[in-house]
Length: 291
DNA sequence: TCCATTTGACCCGC
DNA sequence: GCGGGTCAAATGGA
Image (cartoon, rainbow, N blue to C red; front, side, top):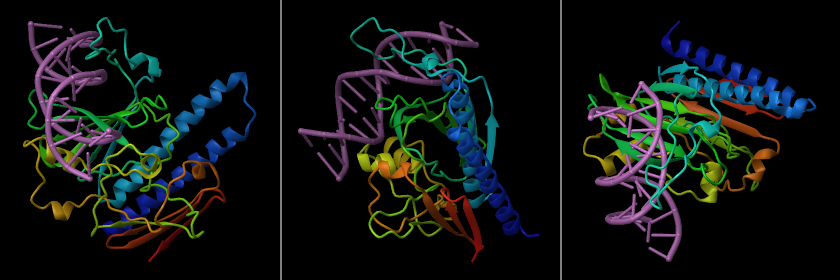
């Protein structure tokens, strides 16, 4: 079996896992809440994490042999790493640093869109590390109290790869964005297609607009790095390492409310082998058509 | 003018 | 005390 076939199988397995987790989540949601629904909430959160993990892994496979390392650590409540009390009016540094929290570490040769809107809030040179570390928080940290954050850093031994460490779960309602899911277009009723096309690059949307809430794209770290620090540069063969790219046909995708309704998504990958994946969450239909 | 990014300052865990 | 994580003023682009 050649590599592309292996990757294809891995991608399919990942999606099937995601489907199974989604099915379980659906069951939990359907069940009447017992005990205030806390148990169900916890289970749902775990399932969401697993779903995200499966999709991330699948995306990584699609984007060529990326590695995902999941490090389950004690899950803390958001209060455990929320801002602490402040004494002065200058709130700089006024926060409570998290001790431990759930983290997912991902290494990739490119920066895959993880489906969420991030805002960079810091950059720091790390001791004994050539490359600075970049800090991102969820765009909805304040408007929806989403505690998700991540750190991105070039891998010392392999500067062409990036290590992304995710902390916390997304509690925001912003739906995972295009790389994962595209909705029915309210305009024409046709499904929108995501194309993982090596010939395109990520659009870089840098505003926390309402549009971005729904389909803001993952900002290219390269762009940010280039604009911020001379320490960062793109590898010479960057064209070869083009980030996972996609394009969505169907233009306007604006209303978050659409997300809550029936979801149909369809994505297309184009690599050596074309993998077309149609996902209908509402009907539970997943079609894998090798083109 | 608005908003994202940059960057230095500050705080906390180890 | 050091180093890492976060904050917010300053800055620059749209």
